[in-house]
Every structure is written in C-alpha cells, then in structure tokens.
Amino acid sequence: TYCTKCSTGASDRLLQPLWDYLLFHHRPLISSPFFPVLLAFSSYFLLSIPFAVLDLLGEKVPFFYQYKIQPDKQPTLRMMAKSFFTALYNHIFFVLPAVIIGMFIFPAPALPPEAPTLYEVFVDGLGTLLLFDTQYFIWHFIHHKNPQLYRWIHAIHHEYLAPFSWSTEQLSIPELMTVGLWSNQDPILLKCHPLTTWSMTVFSIWMSVEDHIGYDLPWTLNHLVPFGLLGGAPAHDMHHQKPSSNYAPFFSHWDIIFGTASTPE
Ligand SMILES: [Zn+2]
Ligand SMILES: [Zn+2]
Image (cartoon, rainbow, N blue to C red; front, side):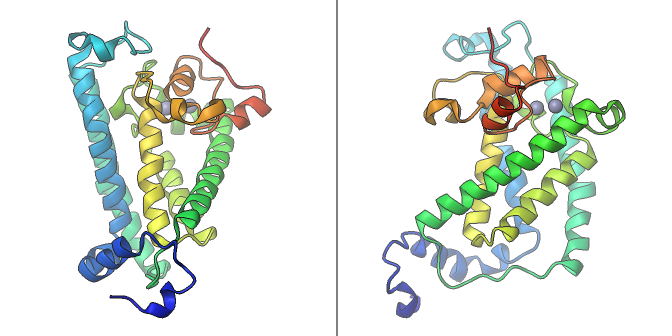
C-alpha cells in the first residue's frame, strides 16, 4: 500500500503499517492544526482520570494508599474540580486562539509517506525530552528566584503543598503558553517525524502526570528507568514541599549538577 522504493533499505520501519493507516484513514484529522492540542488535552484527560479516581477513593484502597507520599494530605473534590476547570478554561480561551493565530504564521507540517524507524523515534524523542528538560529547568529556576515572576506566573502551580493528578496543569496562562511553545517548536527544531512528535506529546504528558500523582507507585517510569535518571513523583512532590529543590521536570542530572537535588529523608 506504500511505495516499495521507500521500504528498501528500511526494513526496521515497523511503524509503517500504523503510519499508512493514519495517512489513509485519518489524514483530515492528523493534518489539522488543532490535532496537537486535541492530542495533548485528551491524553492529559485520559492519563489523569485513573489517578483522580484513586484520589477520590483514598484510604478505601489500602493497596494504593500505602504508596501515598503525603498521606495526611488528601485532595478534595473541590480542589480537583478547580484544577481541572482551570486547565480546560486555559485550553479553550488561550491555547485554541493561539493555535488559530499560529495557522497564519507557521506552515502546516508536511506528512512524509515514510514512517520513522523505531530508532529514530527513540533518539529524536530522547532529544526533545532532554531539550525541554533543560529549557524548563532554567525557566523554573528563574521563576522561583525572582519574587515578581514567581508571584505572577508560577505561584498558581504551587497552590498545594501536596500535588494530585489534576494539579499537573494548574498553570498560569504565561506558563502554559511557554510550555506549549517549547513542546511545539522543539520537535520542529530537531526535525522530528510527526509520529515522533505526537508520541512525545503523549509521553511527556504521561511523565508530567506521574510527577504530580502524589503516589510513589513501584511501577512508574522513575522506578523502571535505572540509575535514578528520572525524578518522577518522589522528586517533584518534594519540589512542592520544598520549592527550592528539584527544578527539572523529568531528568535528575541538572539538579545534581547545580546542587539543587533533594531526596526524601
Ligand atoms: Zn508541579
Ligand atoms: Zn515550581
């Protein structure tokens, strides 16, 4: 169903059937400028829902509750609703208009006939994660050191000392727009295949949600990836308790290098 010329010498294009399926059956959707936002918000919603249910059940499920990082701090339904509707409101009234303006400025990304190789997805994906991690580390550090920037731009994310899944995107509009701009432009800068870009959208949102679930579950990425390379919920929960530590969103290296790493005693 696709040109054999492309497939020669690319026997590891395991993603080609998936890519062909998307191109042939969902082209209007995936070529829409709204698709990245739709993907980002729906994956945020779907990845957070199980943890929101966990938050509502709380102590009733001891199997999960034993992993709660701050057991004395349980989010209320009111807190959860407020965080969720803040994110929804910001996406509808600020992110969507920004996308519409962007339609006139940025060209629609081309959809190549070939799928990326798994190796490309991994290497380019890791590149975008490392770049974003570095950008956010610097931004985050500055917004904690400058009292004006903190108060007006970052404080809303620190409303609660104990994070819970819906608090992940409790962000001010400037913070959400900055993070959105990097998520959008970094893959373009690194010349990622659209499939890599979308995979990383979902994957980085998954990592951000895991940072904020408030549970140190034994099967989260920070436990699956060796050598403590990823901070995960224990590190980011600590950032909400002790805001002058653990500035990096995903990886541990910048906080170790700059001496801002903090682990629970
Ligand atoms: Zn946070
Ligand atoms: Zn912070």
